[in-house]
Length: 232
Image 1: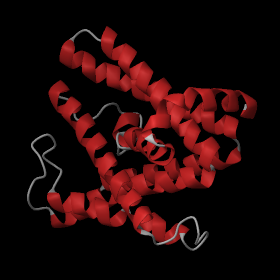
Image 2: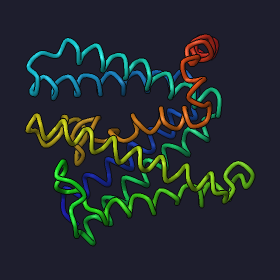
Image 3: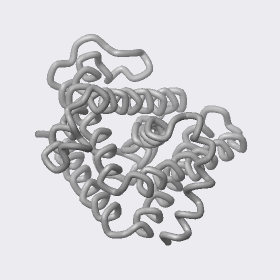
Image 4: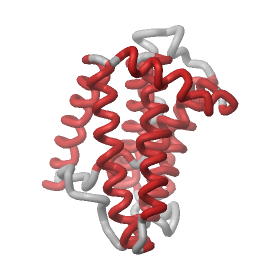
């Protein structure tokens, strides 16, 4: 095991423990954590896009809208409407998808998935899909009705994994255009915040829309904002 891999594993474990604490301690802690992560991700996306377009006023507005609008609101929505356990479930799918892609991709290698990210392979993508099912197998033991082995639940795992992979590729594309390896250096072994949550920031909104339906998506602020202030 390389020194870099050890740092990556230690950082991942610590981040997961912190995430569990923030999710289950209370809603205020969770919401502050989401806003903090969103803010750091916005700063990083603005930094790398500035290297591409050299003028980031529009990017600033778009990233603020997405980071503090769509992502923060849908994260709050999942938490308030479906509970902290379900939020952890979706987060676990994202993490397992990422781990599956990393491990299988490194071990098997093979045909490259796309030119956007030379390190991504077809075997790694399949590994992401396969390992994304693991949270369903684990959570089934705690709630057999909510996390049953139904077609819909298996499809949700695969769809969340697909969304994570597409998000990862999108950020990889931006990094490639900006000619940078990482979006930052705040996380040892990973790089920046965005390097760690590139798939999550797309998967959380997807999971929320998946459950409430696209037609109800634009009513999110009507439900979430009042509940947020109540729970704060």
